[in-house]
Length: 323
Image 1 (cartoon, rainbow, N blue to C red):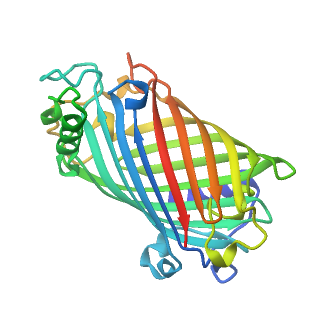
Image 2 (image 1 turned 135 degrees about the vertical axis):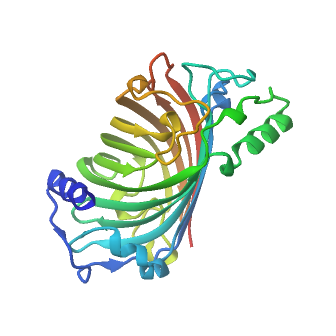
């Protein structure tokens, strides 16, 4: 299945994928990227309610044994190797209720790590990212304590239903994403298409999307958002830009709604026939960058994910640093 997904992505984008890695080189860039997301900025407190990521890209990670199972690399690529830690928490519409809200979203949370490799081709305007996901979901993620303490600090209502959250289970999966420039107007605008897929115990889906970028910016495929000191020659030092992104997914499995694959004792989950099999997500982003630092603020909206659900939106802040 992993090889099939990668082959399909390469076929869609028209880029040849080689099994041998000797034609690719590792970028010297060292990068760190942090994001924090919360729906409180829109005065809501339900569904996807908070999340954060911490990403580290280092050349030394090219020696990781995980790279052996991350699939083929397009010929002539520049490789980036990284680890991303991700935490997300989900709740039903009313967190004040001390009982199970039947027909609503279950309480759920997870922590997992993405061990990923990016194969980037600046000249062909193409990028292939593959990742192994490994972690856990359930009470061990600590979402009950985190949200309770946060609401205490903010003098917000105390969440009372976390004892009914989806139980501890394994997060294990494989994901691939291909991106290709479709159109560019000078250095001030570019349109990028994408196709992605995930197969795992947390999320199984296939999707496609498009991203429009305009403003004072460096080309998307020049780097991973920022560069280290050794790679900044010829790049724009100041960036000020806007992005609009639209993605659609065909959903096969969502453990935050249906429960993990290895436990059958969850207090409450949604049945498979209640899951929305098509989900759309839109993102609007404003970015500001100088040299090796980039700041971003995004507003994200997602269509209903299950029968009777509402659409939902949240805000995400991010900072990238190249060193």
